[in-house]
Image (cartoon, rainbow, N blue to C red; front, side, top):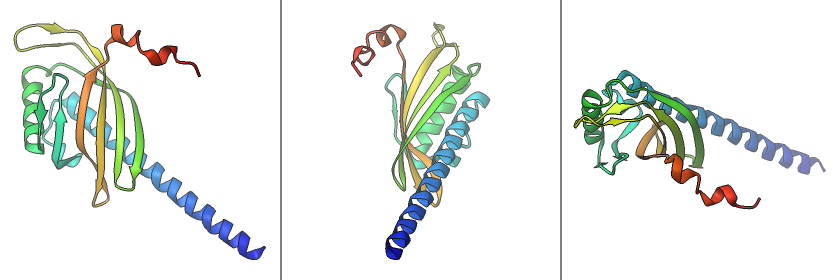
Length: 166
């Protein structure tokens, strides 16, 4: 009986420690997403190395694929200087799924305000969703890949999941 209680105590302690670490990791990742949003809203992406890996990649909303931090930072800053300089991004929700102790998938919902394309087209504000991959390097969570899409409100009405039985 005494051994059973000791084993149970050890298992509960390990479970509690794991849950605490997972909560700390989720909070750390959410903080990194906030850093990305802050860069957007300041229109200054020179600090991306603080929340992205050097080999990060990004597929933007229209399918452009940037393959390392230098390209991601340059292209993002280019568009913020030329197209997004008056936009704001609002964090509408972050969902973190820890895959293993050094890898996490994040779904990040946001709202990006109206902007004007280089050829003068006004694009209305939209809800977007991004799939982000984070890795833990030297104790810090960094984004290593991302892709975002506009949430199409017309198509969303036809999502089969809305009609799926429980």
